[in-house]
Length: 133
Image 1 (tube, rainbow, N blue to C red):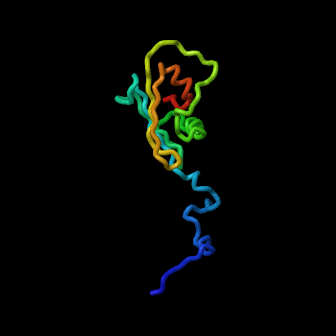
Image 2: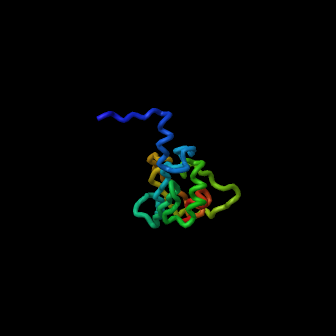
Image 3: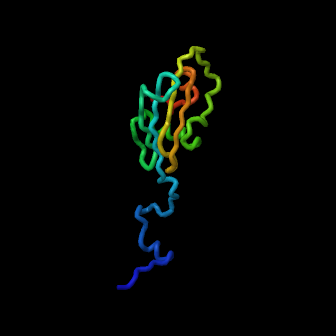
């Protein structure tokens, strides 16, 4: 029985398993999905609310604003700790801590982060649409 060999030049003639996608970088197909939790207090458990944010390869999940949240997370590489609070928004100085955590994959790499805010106003000021769940 003869061995099958394919040269790199012949590989293109075999066809891409994703028709019409041979010129698209693999980064566009890498996994981007997070489980976001919100808790009252400074610990990540027990959670008050939990949503799934799936950005790619197909958008979806249970986050109410998937498209906008995915777009906001892209420049931060999925790390919500890199977000900066919006300028000009004033929050009351009431200490009612809330903690948001994110666990999942971003560009096919495991990621985990959590952040505690003094109150929900500060959380929304810092996270914007990502924290709107």
